[in-house]
Each structure stands twice: as C-alpha cells, then as structure tokens.
Amino acid sequence: MATHPEALRRERILNSKLYFDVPLSKVSIIYSSAYDISFMGIEKLHPFDSSKWGRVCKFLVSDGFLEEKAIVEPLEASKTDLLVVHSENYLNSLKSSATVARITEVPPVAFFPNFLVQQKVLYPFRKQVGGTILAAKLATERGWAINIGGGFHHCTAERGGGFCAFADISLCIHFAFLRLRLSRVMIIDLDAHQGNGHETDLGDDNRVYILDMYNPEIYPFDYRARRFIDQNIEVVSGTTTDEYLRKLDEALEVASRNFQPELVIYNAGTDILDGDPLGLLKISPDGITSRDEKVFRFAREKNIPLVMLTSGGYMKSSARVIADSIENLSRQGKIERDPYDVFVTFVYVDHSSFSSNGT
Image 1 (cartoon, one colour):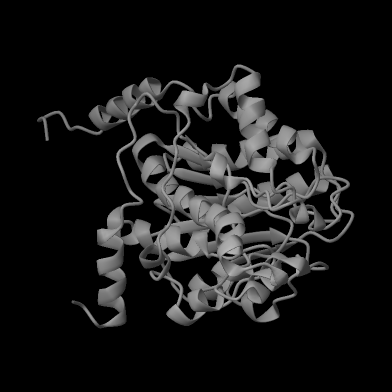
Image 2 (cartoon, rainbow, N blue to C red):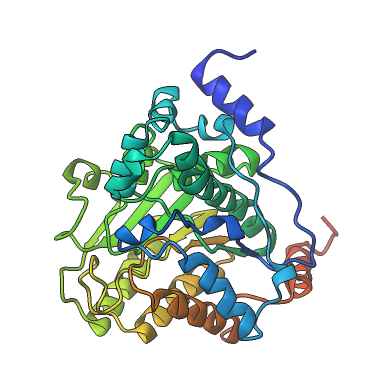
C-alpha cells in the first residue's frame, strides 16, 4: 500500500469508479435527481434554490430539448475519492452537524442528527462532485459536457463555506491530470463571487490558469486567494450587461494569448442576474445567454474540451435562464444533442490530422 501523499493520491484516482464509459445513446448532460436538496423545508432558510438543478432538467425535457433517458447519471464520490484533495481531518469535521450548518449557512442544520445531515445535505453534494469529475472525461471524448450542478468554488481542501462542502473543481482537475493525461487546464469562473476555493488549492500550480471575473464587493473577500488569480477581472455592484460582456470579450482575448489549455472548466453561475440578492450585478437573461455562448465559442473554435458547471444563482428564475442558455448553445451549434453527431465530428477531425503518407 502506498504511503507517500502523492502516491496515495495517484492510487486513489486510479482506483476510483467515478470515470465510466457513457454510451452514445446519452447526451453530454449530467444530472441526478439526488442533486436536489429537500430537508423538511429548512433548505428554504438559505437564498440558494436547492431544487434549481432538477428544475433546469425539467425545463429541458418539457421543452422537447432532451429526453430523460438521455441524461447521464453520475456516481456518488466516495470518501476515498474525496481524499484525493481533502484531508481526513476535514472530512471528519463534516461528522459534526454544526460544521455543516456553518458551511451551508443554515443554522438549524446544527440541531439535526448527523446521519440525517449526511443523507439529506452531503449526499446530494457528493453526487454532484461525481458529476463534475465525470464531466471532464466526457468532455474530452465529445468536446463538451454540462454538469447540471457542481461548481462549489468556495470549498478548499481544508475548509468549506458559502454553501460549498466539497472542492469539486480541484478534484476534477486532479483526476484529469492523471486519468486523462492532461497537463494544462484553464478555469473560467464567471460566478458573481470570487472562486477562492480552487484558487487556494490550485493557484500555485503552473499547470492551471485561472480567469476569475467577480464582484469584489461581496463574499468571500479572500484577498490572499486573489493573489493566485492569473486574470483578475473585477465587476463592481451595478455592472450592466453591455459593460460585463465587453469586459468578458477582452478577458477571453487575453486568456487566448496567455495560455493554451487542453481542458476548460467553466463555472457558469447565474448569480450575476439582475435582481439576484447576493450577486448585486445587473446582467439580463439574454446577457447570460451571450456570456455562455462566448465561452463555448472560445473553447470549441480551438477544439478545447469544455466542462460547464452551474454554480451559484439565487433566484427562482435562474433555472429557466440556464435551460434557455443551454438550448441556445444547441441552436448556435456549440453543443450537439445527438451524440452520434459528436462521434462523427471527432472521427472527421482525427482523419483530417493524418498526413499524406498515412501516418
């Protein structure tokens, strides 16, 4: 049995069951009904819509965009999987309901038996972590993948916070480095809040490039983590759609010159929406659609696989906006609903790279 920390990490990643082959009958959209948190109504004490993920999928299905049987169901991240990034001490701390109450910002959680907290709160998070990790494999095979969940960008290896109990982005990248043999990953974090979790975990790793565009006037005020951001773009409270999209265009242009990633992790929070009580920005629903389209265009025109995570968003309208944006990505040719189309495209790209002598 390996004992060196890096050897243990490698062993855990290689032995994980979170990567599995997805049949072509499935679309590159990952979701489980277990994502949604329902805990005797106390989840409503937090502004986050903990049924957002399920409502996004219901819209996609009811709109005729997606069949339920085509959605990819991820596995739950096990303790061994989580130990790839998290310490034993941190995972043990989650056996205290008071700790989970602090992380989720719902004080009454502290008074419930921990077995209930594990089942009703942490299990849904672990399923979403499994979805984020699997998304990287699926994206490298098909060009893109969307986890209708994940994006817990405030959680570090040693501390959770901001409704984020597990560091799914950090975990996803460590799995991708080893299992997918990647060496350059770009994080594009466009949630309204600073992604201090992945910045703390990965900011000193030169294989990771971080573009974070966030409101500096709101949580988490993590000035230490800001030092690890490669492209730090601040959008203050009240920023409107046109200004936001202009700054994004400039940021993506700089990123394309500075770093050539083999995978993009896109944290697509909708808390930038006008009216969001925590984001305090003024971006329209159409602005969200344009934002997502720009990021997908950035990656797909360069044939860079892209993982999208839905992250924050604290209004009931967020689910409809996310579904509308995903449907627009299909209309614009940035994603494919028929997995066979992806397969044919990738075969074509592979053949186009052959030289005239057949090598």
